[in-house]
Length: 430
Image 1 (cartoon, rainbow, N blue to C red):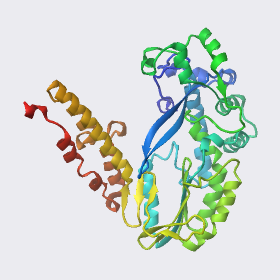
Image 2 (tube, rainbow, N blue to C red):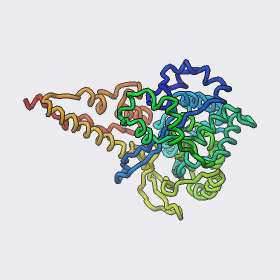
Image 3 (cartoon, rainbow, N blue to C red):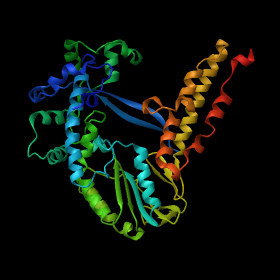
């Protein structure tokens, strides 16, 4: 077992001390009796609010963030590893290895590979019927009983062990405390949290817990963001995936699910329209599962065009439509990176340049040049390490995977020119 791939160290402040030496805790984490008796700390919760550009206008997006204590996170990481081993084996047996593509630990691929496979499939078809959709409030609605039954199905056990049951209970009937309430209690601003090792000493924590603790009392919903949440969502969907994949492949099509996003394509438009009701029946057969009406879209590929269909009567609504999938756009002929992603790159670059110009002129000397070239030019893109690259590195990887099927460089061909054009050179003013 490669421990370094299981355990990831974090430095945020929580209810327990920061535990950078995870190896010290492995004997405890791997002891089933210890986990059976383990007292999980509450999660810390806050709402991440940000404005997101959807291609036409900006909209406010809210994401609920829950993060676990350090010891609890190591426990979730270990049990996530164990469940992933069982799950990966099960989906291979069921013929789902290519269908389920999110949160997989054994595929060694990313969204570029997955988008390429879908586009290549569509390019090879003379015609195709396509459905893209996602599920409404996915993590918030997962039924606890159904989840536990599917866990038993995946691990091939009639009952859950006491330690695994304890772990599942902690993310189903999860408790949490609002970060805002914690900050008010300790009189510390969020930007200064890194200066303290933990929120409270243990006696103080017990008092605060009685006053501020909240919990999920429903029979549905799991905490989103814990290291084990992703694999549990895949396990929840395994029978749905099996039913949909069997249906679609029996018609020569492909089915892909990336977390709560689904993609279905069938190489016969008429057959595709006829099985829509069967798909709806499979969805309704899974507890609390519901497709998003606003994000469910139907397309047909005819010749070299993608046409969008009306959801109600499946008649052509737009003859020149574009299909968006995992960050890429396909119109039946060419593939591009979604335009809003490119726009975001330029917007952030220009904002950074504006800040650099302001302080360069104020100090009467050029500053920040090396960093901005690393973040927004080809000078910082030439690296094999994904975490050390920039958006242009992503473009290079996309070109390498799509090869002759696309040329994404043309979407960012003016990046170097625009960067240097907008960047003030104070030395020339002197």
